[in-house]
Length: 469
Image (tube, rainbow, N blue to C red; front, side, top):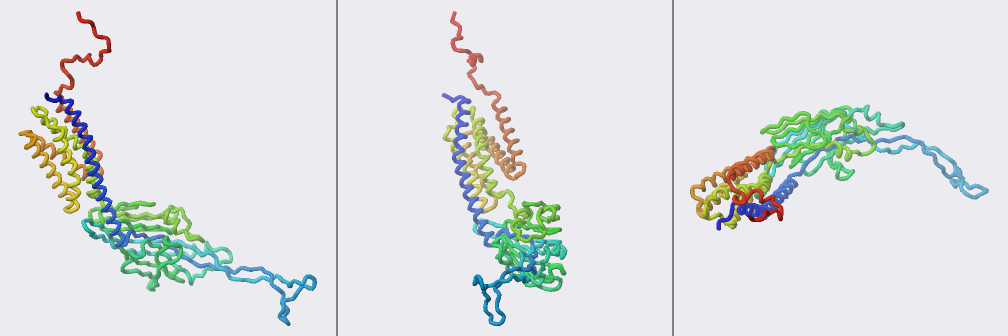
């Protein structure tokens, strides 16, 4: 006996839920490949230099002070050189003396009066196996000036700064990423750079003994370095201006400050920040090393973002998989509903499995030929297989063209949804609503209940039947 359309629809719903199992395993396969891709990117990035950062530049000025120290000393006989004893107690006689000594105080950590940093980057791709990792080569030029008046305000009574021993320190994220030029100029004079020591790994970087040049001449620090994934900088100074420029077309800015001005197009980005010291909420002079605090409160940067990579797209396709499987099942049901031999549930499972394998096939191809070509190849294979199955096995005849057209529309719409990252929810919602409307219209003439049963039968109460006459 032919199964009712209602029962067949219920079975299709159950089969659709059952298809969530192979879709789950397909998604797990995608996640596994994505994790492998991320670990490869991390490994290549680390080998190239990793995420680089330029910390807050500081001038470190040693400080001394002449102070009077009072102490007791034994009284010595100037003739014999022996310690004199108290005739009563027999203990050494002592006297109070006051000496003026020089002691070292905590150094003064001084922020720049002006800090102008320009960083330009050129990106390239490194390859490891199937994976492509974007990395960059950068050149940074920092122009610094320091105000002697700021130092004078930080001194306490009796303190004397040792200007000749003044040191400039600029923390860096990864020292081994330094490449090419690394120099410090004080006017026309070159100053030697050394690796900064002390203060732990958070203060690793470069330092230089600037001495009298600290306040008399603008300082220009030039650094060349490699990096990958992101670049960060810490503003610190009375007036800070930072400019970042790169040929990477997909920057993602993050951190304490976003750009004041930014130009982003297919040729790259050019962004600038102007940051007054009041917005930092930090002192410009300190008797303690506050580099860590400055970094935590003020650091910002840019990530070399890879928009919507094919693993993300494949994972999203897996999320939509249950919806598109349900639409395919419904399409087959509506096409074959007038057939004398309905499609068997096992045949629906075959169709669902073909669609579940679509996302895995797409990822496997995308790792070799790119997402667009992989999507066309995987969707064409899936559509071709299901359409051929409908023609040969399900014997849909002319209705096979309707099945092929419906599948082509489904996979075409899915591609547009995956490409439109920002509009994916809107497009998916509209498509789902339209699909429901089409299904409601296509089943408008279906009889969902027994036509011989009066409507009131659904609402009769037990025992309300009238006796036959």
